[in-house]
Image: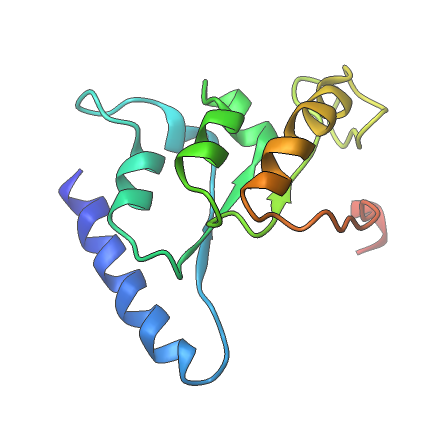
Amino acid sequence: MQALVETGKKFNELSKKLADHGMKIGYHCHGGDFEPVEGKIPWVVFGENTDPEVILQLDIGNAIGGGGDAIAMLKHFPGRSISVHLKEHGGPAGAVIGEGDGTGRKSSRSVNRPAARSGTSSKTRPARDPESD
């Protein structure tokens, strides 16, 4: 966990440097960020050791996959997730919202209100086709 605290310090330093240029820094979560280590949730440790200016981009599918509670995290860090990544969880490879197991559609509905209350933008963009890259 000490490595996360140190990483948080680096993000804070970078955040201050970037602010002078009108830029921000943030971290996009992964499933392992919600799996307890030494009795603590890494995402929480990182968030509690970074300044409010450091963005915490919550990936709903990754949070669910790692056993996390996305809504609880949005509430725990209000205003920190200025964007969230909504996607299917548990569906076929490459599934976009509505084409997988429905988790993305359900998470989209369940996350919209708490996300808006925590300062997250409601803008969306279409999913990209990985085959066209």
